[in-house]
Length: 220
Length: 218
Image (cartoon, rainbow over all chains, first blue to last red; front, side, top):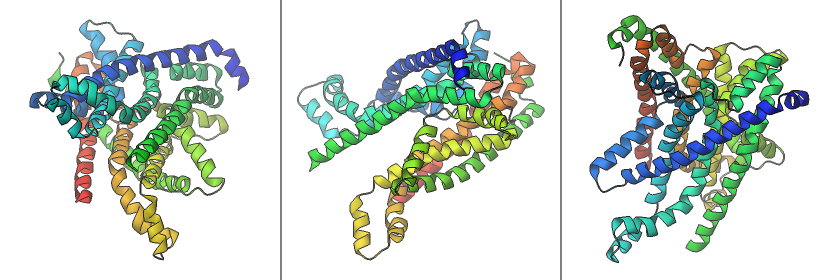
């Protein structure tokens, strides 16, 4: 197993780089898009709410693979060239943004509505109240579940293997099929994924426990 | 945009529906097994039995932090390396069940832990055994809190069956790819059909969950 690792080290490292790259890119953009659709969903405007709802329900109920393959096989035919990595990252971003929208919406809605009313009656506009009063409180509630979304995102980035996206899973398949040591190769790939996801997972559990513990003390 | 009439001829629709049937049966079998194993593992981890709970917890944490796709490859391409050869359907069932059991185990443990510990103490001091208190007092309350998380995990399970296309399991996604592989003008219509079919299956699960949620909350 060790020789497979050392012999193919550049490929493993390249895969790790692409996996991390796609995950971070998709995280950044899905945070932005997700927050926009979360705000649309709680908007006083009914049409905005409906648009937000449709977006979230659509991407939450369709497989990531279908979305990604759409960008890989259909979009290039319309004259927009997309590499496998780009198609995969776009698919990941759209898919994840729906889950992030739900997480952020739940976070905002868990802030006591009295906070918004108090801010508004103190003369703040809706946007100011959201920006300075509601969102800062919502962030604390939102961070642990967002961390879990990021872990899912890293795991889901393996979908890049379907579209030749050079990620860990893709490199793993290449190595497995050239060395025939499938078991050991996949075990190494597994360890490399765990190096990213396990610390995040334990970190989120720790934060969750600490912050929810703090809330309980405040209540008491 | 594409040849809709050609793509939606009966022979293609029938082929897609055959794929849908494999998707639904794979999902159903995996859901049943992973709910059973997930509950057992979640309880085992919650009960803090010396050594055993630690080992169970360790396995849960490892597997649920790996991509399902990797577990699928491991089951289908890795296991033959040590002499265990599975066909595509059993391999997909094993991989899905192993992965989803661990995800559900965490949700179930979290749900049980969220029940006020005073409930257990009160039940015990009223003379119920640990098993009785768990079954009649703790689990019903925990179950209510878990439903949304469990259902969204099951929706993920249904969506993730599409990954099995890579081990040439003839499910919905695979059949879709076969059809648009014959004629590029079928791509857009077939992607629309795939989206609609997956959406119907997944969305009906969320509707059931909302219904259950309302019934139990009342």
